[in-house]
Amino acid sequence: MKHSVICIITFVVIGFVSCEKTSNGYKYNQGSLPETPVNLSDFNTEYDDFNSSAPTLGWLIPFCFSTNRNSSGEEFDIIYQPMNVNYDKSSGKLTITNEYANWGIYEEKYEVIKDGLNAIKTTGNEYGPNLLMEYVANEYIFTLLYSTDVGGKSQIRYITNKNSDGFTEPADVEFLKSEFDDMYPTFNLNKNKIYFCSNRDGEGFNIYYVNVNSGKDYQSVLSDSTEYEIFMDTSLSGTSDDKCPFIFRNVMVFASNREGGYGGFDLYYSLWENNKWSEPVNFGPSINTEYDEFRPILIDEGVSETQTMMVFSSDRPGGLGGFDLYFTGIDSN
Image 1 (tube, rainbow, N blue to C red):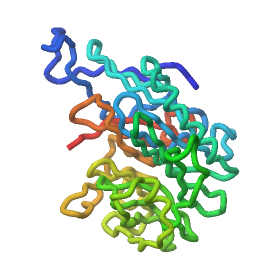
Image 2: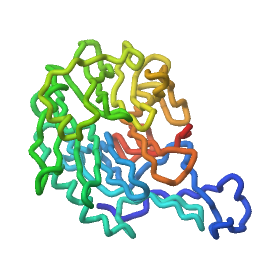
Image 3: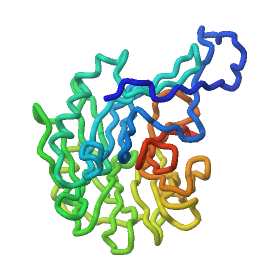
């Protein structure tokens, strides 16, 4: 694990451009996130690093992502590193590192994630992690959703450490299985639907959902062997490939190579309004390029009151090699 500071970005917050301190003693009352993507170089290598997951916990985030670094580019595994997001209200500097630093009290609690990730490694590719966290009886409970193609087609599996001393053996989410590729599961805000992408209709990837029981915990929902009806969300899906859905509050972000983009896969967002998803909107040229932008996630890291951090991957020029992880700020409204 590297221990260098990957990015230090100084922001002048509107309304506090003078050198005087604010009423609470700080020069800068709140931070802001960059409007153009910044390379998360501490987390990147010359190989492909993408498909991230990061539960919202504030400034210290358990960050998981897929990479083929461990096999020198041959196959993808999911790895864990801490993401330490720090905004210094005295200097106005935003720093993101992959070390615990002053959050060392959480190291033992978070490092157990590595045990689960070691358990899911196969000779195939593991993609699209979605790390879910619960805090029960003063303990952090981790449930990881992901997909693996070790059997040929990508299938969605999960592990959890809720009811055992360690993590359970990887298990299929039976009601999401098909003979096609099923990937990138995400719960909606109310936890009564699971969205994912699949090519089960035979014409590229579309976004699907299944209704589940929000009154049950994650483990009970995912271990259910009942056969549920699967629906394609036609407001999100088109004739091209629509992949990597991720839901944060009332916002879904995803990747698509549909017409009207800037080239390759672009990032889009949709809002949950009036009990349906709105028409997807391209994030525009400040984020998307002629290259591929892929697997976006959203994190409330506590830096800005008006922005949300979006992390995604891209093979644009200027990175360390292959796909790199980037972050940027998007309007929370």
